[in-house]
Length: 508
Image 1 (cartoon, rainbow, N blue to C red):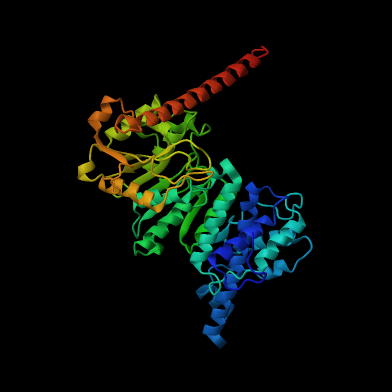
Image 2 (cartoon, rainbow, N blue to C red):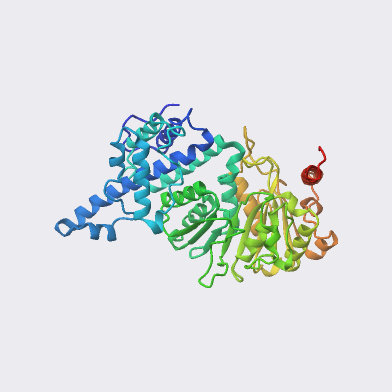
């Protein structure tokens, strides 16, 4: 790969992306590619903070002249405070045990900006040379030292796009692990477009990963001519490194007013109102981890936040509907809408999940079920669906559910399929207008009264309601998903039996 010039000044988007990827490749060998994000993003963010600080410092000197003071500058010009000795230039000058100097600087910056940057750099021990040798860290920092990331050299849109580029590349390198922090942007674009965030909306992602969905809402509002700064953005993420990446992502996209909380959304939801109750949002959006088997089912019936809607506790070995319950519980009662990515199993699995399907249908909360193509995600090749819920449906959709089969709308790729802009627009139009704007039969859709859904015992399998040439294939997908669920249940039962036998003294 051809990298950017040795001393890049004003770079093109492609040159910037190549340079940043070159920084990541400086770690190749001693650092696993799946861990690149934990090392590259904090160093990138540190360099950006320092360069932007210098940029605003020069502005303050020019504007204030003899009236300049550090207090005026920090108050009126600077977004972040950089303590003495913690600037990038101070750290870069240290050429022996650079990790120790970097640790010290990052801690100092976090402590100087507690409300904004506490924990943002993650938990990497930069001085541990077994994890990142001095030579690799030095090579990484040398790449960034040649970049100037202030607004005079790199626009905010360029830097935000470059950050997204790195996220995508790191997801490719991480394989299935990428699902923990990255949702393909074409899927994010579709879900955000469907939910149609408006200026002034509050938006929450309770499993926010790298905050791609929150970033996309700001882009959508901006594209529609609204003020993205009027949005109120919230997210919660359990993984420390990923929570830091989310906050960096928002800052680098020019978003400064947001709340990203770290913690387990089920066990310790942290997005609460002043009374300690779950905060309510206009838009709740997520691609949560599928089929969690370690969620707190045993305490859900007595959940203090009353998220066991209808008194229903989803299966202990599968938290899909628990995520949906949490999201519905946090949408506003008038303007609220929910969009969530789910495996097809949520549409037809029996037991308590069937009870939850009955509840959302009878409460008239489920607005649409949209079946997406196979192989769109890093973490799974199985087909997935989008479920759209609304607190208040339009009159024509009351007591109905819109089913859309969009499985043929994709562009094939080498490793993954993608949704083109035309695909996204067609699916969005099918949802909003109830018609296939392409008119080529590629999309199939049907608005179904809940009486019909009752006849099928609240089974939401798309193939039951849409008669198309692909129905047989859709039914096969459902059957395969059911088989996988049954096999997983059998494996769990076998493990439990083996454990009981060993406890009883039998050699299993």
